[in-house]
Length: 513
Image 1 (tube, rainbow, N blue to C red):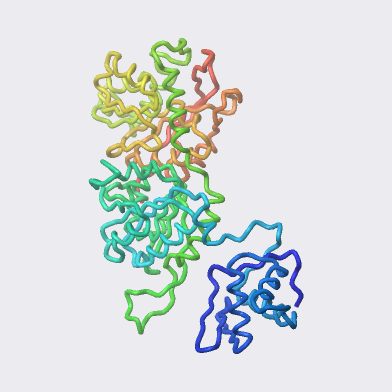
Image 2: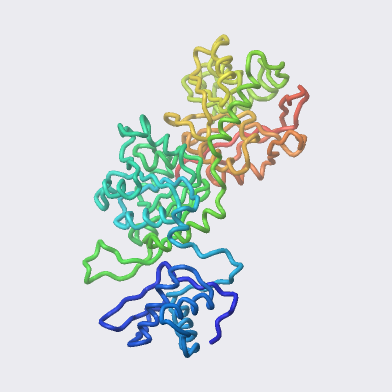
């Protein structure tokens, strides 16, 4: 079989070759074994050695001629051997003008992602050192977070030796990550992997629980999160686990389908292949390449800083007059908040407000936060602009509100809220961040709690650069987690002081079934 002249040949990094006595054996992808003896085995050893460095066919023949001290005859013998080596996967061939095959050296120097690998108490965590080695080979910078149960199957010290980085095993590690290491790692990550993901950890993440470092990282990060469930098939098929995985998919998490494996809960002589295990590390890393090519990117720190600085300047004391700002609530806003607060339409709203926990997102100078606080609500208000929060805190009534300077997509907030209020935060987020927003709002809301959302609609000028929402887009964003109680036309002041077409939504979080 002739070899294409334009081909470049290279020994495969994962070539399956072994020797016994004077014989050389090649194992093809189907598991079939091909045996070479005598001169054929010697020629194969020489070819594989030469092709540790990529060469064309002519370059290979030149190297063989130099090795034996003369022309290689007959040529057909070498060509037949090359065909066998390619068929068994021991040698890779690609066009000269194609992208080069990655060698181990290329993998070490290739720029990868900042990856946080979260390891749980699923038995597949025994393969974690192998998975870490493969991720490092792909060029990724890896940090490892472990649950307590994960340490039953692999050692922290071994993973630290592999990664040259400390392993996080506690929310309060007194290590180089400092206080609250889960927040440091969540902010650092460009990709978070939960591999393997036990049923317990899946439940924690779905519920927004931050009681241990793995789930806390997954809840706090804005990076794409990949979950690789691994458990007994009976657990995979349990309604509660299916429900949690469906919820996580709706929340924007990436869920890898389990594959077949052997259940170690059974005695070795009783084991049979059954679905439920995480893919083997080699297969998982191959899937990961495709996931990375399709997943939305994390917003990096320089962008975060630029966004914060931009809003900070807009609320600075010496900034131009802010025509969009008002000490009065938007028309209809108080009635919408009352509908959110009182689940019973005839309830006394004044009574219902007392002690109600409210979160005000993108609070600006705090008009809504102060209004609700003055009526008895326990209000937490957050804005990315420190200047806006400072102004809000200094105004009359500001002392009764808990003010936070920070990005709502990554901030850590305690407990659940009865009402979440958002006037104009969602529509300024990039489309890739809106799913993270929906996931966080859903996690913050108590069961039966309400979101009061005001966002630009299709009538808003395109030059404002905001996302224009209609009711269908809002419902699609939150999936089945929230139901729509009401929607009405609204308006907000724009940068030039004129009204901008908007809608105000009251959505309620479904109670558990």
